[in-house]
Image (tube, rainbow, N blue to C red; front, side, top):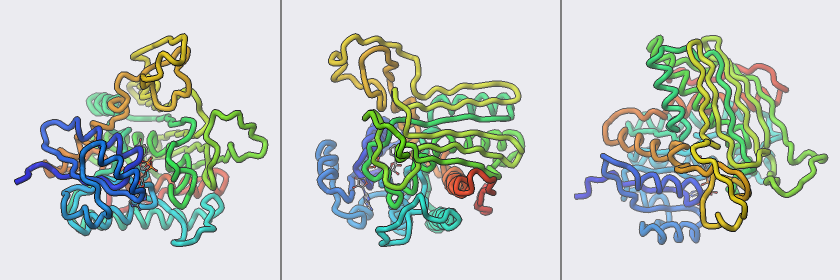
Length: 397
Ligand SMILES: NC(=O)c1ccc[n+]([C@@H]2O[C@H](COP(=O)([O-])OP(=O)(O)OC[C@H]3O[C@@H](n4cnc5c(N)ncnc54)[C@H](O)[C@@H]3O)[C@@H](O)[C@H]2O)c1
């Protein structure tokens, strides 16, 4: 009998690639990726063929063969795929954003940037609660794939914070780059929004997690977000933007810049930035200003290697870092980017949590609170930065 945890992946794009690579690095827990399914069957067949795993035509065909569904679809499919998996009695890993608002079913005229944000916030929160209800009913694990929680720099800060009994006064973070490679990104009804849900979710959820750790250490309860003030902008669709061809610009109805100011229930604050406007490689960083320390987490770039290359072609076959743009001149090649981003560590934790009957570090609370903050941010931005209360799930935390 096969004792390994059997995993089936849904979606065969970018996220599936680094999830699959992470399964190969799991230690101490027997795991086997059985197969994969996706809407894009050519891509799915290619993915399966290269890795010698099964390609399934549908999710329902794959469900009986696996114990875990790893949901690597675009945001619009996170709820239906996850609920179908829970109803079939499977554990679920779901990529970020946990879920969101994707417009009225079948409405091809839907424009997310123009749609009323009160409705969006209510619907996104309702969607998150439906997935969590399905998880609780099935008694299976809900693993939220927010890799920043698992980034070694963030985990080190969590250790410093808890062992030093620190209090975070102000957290500051950013994820920015020159634009996602996913064709679904840029179309609100597929992605659920732009820089807010697609990028700010990373530093934001790492900060939510660290305030949870702080609260558990000091009071035995997580410190949760209370209110948010945000602005969003559509810089590359500004008629005065002069396109020089270095940034992705084909977004239909999403924002490409955001800033979010967050107030926690203990009165402490965070500021998060995200954009699609930054060249020079993915910019992933977080700074913590605590009452007893200060930590700067440089996920990318990190200066473990400082390299000068006088001729572009010399590095043609060498991976340098995500979205570097050019390999000529000075760069910081990432020695193990997946590790720095926490991808293997998150899958390791999920597999241990499923095998060991314990909650993952990134589970329901991080998933639910992140959706509440992100869509409260959209409502605040619609009101030009007015403070909006975060609609927390009272059942959690
Ligand atoms: N944590 C990270 O750093 C990170 C990085 C990239 C993407 N992501 C997240 O991963 C998810 C996927 O992003 P991606 O870049 O891989 O997208 P992608 O567009 O490259 O791939 C999406 C895949 O999902 C499949 N798909 C779409 N709708 C489906 C459905 N209803 N049922 C089954 N399959 C379906 C497509 O055929 C495709 O194979 C997104 O939620 C994204 O936000 C996370």
